[in-house]
Length: 251
Image (tube, rainbow, N blue to C red; front, side, top):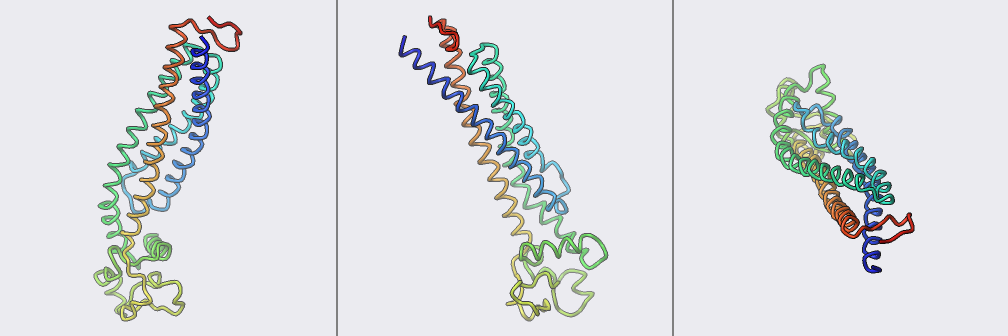
């Protein structure tokens, strides 16, 4: 009997700890999903398909559910309600399936990043030099990411703006920050950022998606142990007639 009580107490302790983890995880997931969406606002000019936000939206929904789940888990574990435990298990299972779907979507959209970024950036760079938001966007990203052109700085040779100006130079936003007097001349490549913006952006976006996928995988493992603990508590209580600790009676 003592061993059984010890097993129940251990399972309850594990489940309570996991409930606290769910609370912390919910807050963390909310932050990660929010950061992805806020980052997308900086990248949105390069994406036509807003479905790339779908994994982040799923994560935020999961974060809200996890906060609710953490509170519910603490309550049903202490009370040892059979109905509550079953409800807790059902939510955990649903979230596990949802996170698995988000993990798969992460793989899908990660592979779409390269083609979509390059295609859209080609159009933006081609319209550079006109009075439009695209010109400011290109200058902003070339300065922010310290890059030049789509694939590399020589891409500007085939752009309408380059041929129209006729001064054999790229935009000054291509200049390295340490060269204050840089005029963007192609004859002075040592003063220019030569790496293409598409390469830099692709790497940054992929890193962010990979980070989100790792977080999702970690929380999925946590949920697996949470479901296992619920099954231990529910099965032992049902088979052995165990009474809640707060009742002061043990069968």
